[in-house]
Image 1: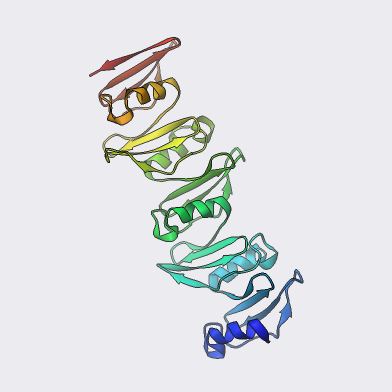
Image 2 (image 1 turned 90 degrees about the vertical axis):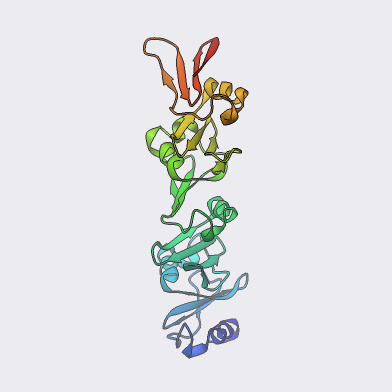
Amino acid sequence: MQGAIQQRWNTLGGAGGVLGPHLTCELPTTDDTGRLTHFQSGSIYWSPATGAWDVRGLIGQRWSTLGAERSWLRYPTTGETPVRGGAFTHFQGGSIYFSPTTGAREVRGAIREGWGRLGWENGYLGYPVSDEKNTGSFRGAYQDFQGGTMYWAPWSGAHALKGDIRDTYATEYPGEDLLGFPTTSEIRTPNARGAYNHFERGSIYWTPTYGAHPLWGQIRDIWATQGWENSRLGFPISGPLSSFGSDLEFQIFQGGVINWWPGGHHIEYN
């Protein structure tokens, strides 16, 4: 053991530190790019591009399960770093975050960047509770967090859904197939009485009193021309509905109903 690996081990307290005594001499990594040394409580990996960093504990176990330096995460770029409620290690291809309640989970790419914009583990999403998964259509991906879900597609970016809006998108309606992917994370309405997410083909609006309801198509456009939730119509209290046996579609709002049919529409106020 020598050089950068020796220096990192010394920085961590040597044999009396978090890694403990070494179990192996310095060895070549399996991709022949770097070097490594295993210790009692972890390992230190070095590569010319990243330097020498420790991987240990459940974060180290997760990285090893994924394929260590041969995985898409590749080499560590930080040591294990404590944060509120847990710890993380950054890698060339992403990060692994750990907390006692969520375990060790990897985050990467645009979903990781979107999570970072919302405050990482200190934001309302909290820690990841799943790995990144493909959506049902395989056109995008999503990852669940303690406080919500981050959805991503190449054309819409990564945006977060939470609470009733997320549940409505995922379960009550066909979600991705109907509304498409989210194009915003959750936003409070200007009047501070509710919240919404916009999607490729519509929106979901939420209030504490009436819950979350989707809007799309011509009815959404008509509502927008009236002033959205600040209009006389207020917030939606139902999703879009149709009249059996006719082309009439309608949606109920706090202050009335929007009726639409091909070629026309009518607003009924309460």
